[in-house]
Image 1: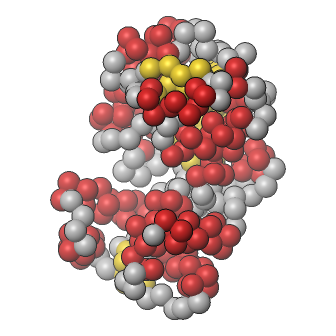
Image 2: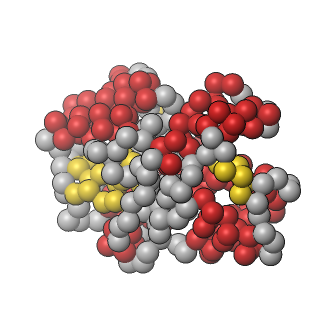
Image 3: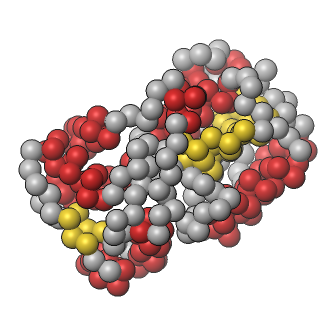
Length: 290
């Protein structure tokens, strides 16, 4: 049985490989990465490192050869780019005779109006069409996405948002990684969908938890989308990024990440890490890297 993780040198991918190594012999694992030099640490531990680039399908034929179980970690980029890249990966998996595909999707992907949903809808559909048994890991929002805002608060800034009362099922990447490792290495996950969400919280509730950790009251500045864009521009963020950040706030405001689920318990035997605990780890991590 040979398992392969794509994008294994990314933040989530690295955590998945580490989680797999706790239960799976290194010789059963392979990783597919664009830059093999970044994966030397994996190679040194006995994991097979393969070069694979979603923009070059011929490299994926080699990367996926002889693989039984594949974890396809969604790529970065705009929807159009990701849809094309994921289609290349799914087609290569089919050509290689892969027997199972796990895919990191998005909360409530099929019905979602989230700005990132089109990528995941198209990829889920492409996987189903192959007839290969699958598991869709519909990940909610990584708590790590909030690190820039947390860093701002630590520097004395308010928490700025245009997300209104929209709720998010935040969880740390470690939780999502452990769930993915269970599905990739386990049995009985064929043709399943897991909604992986922490407890749904508003921005105010998240910030209140952060304030408890820091021992101070953190002001929450609720603004409209136009003001949010101006504030982000004033903070020095690049122009090309600002429309996406505004769309993320809109998607949250419209409830696209307000998903309640107990699927973490099904996979990792516990709910998502409590928000106070996860934020404490994050704040400590930011403090130690200063």
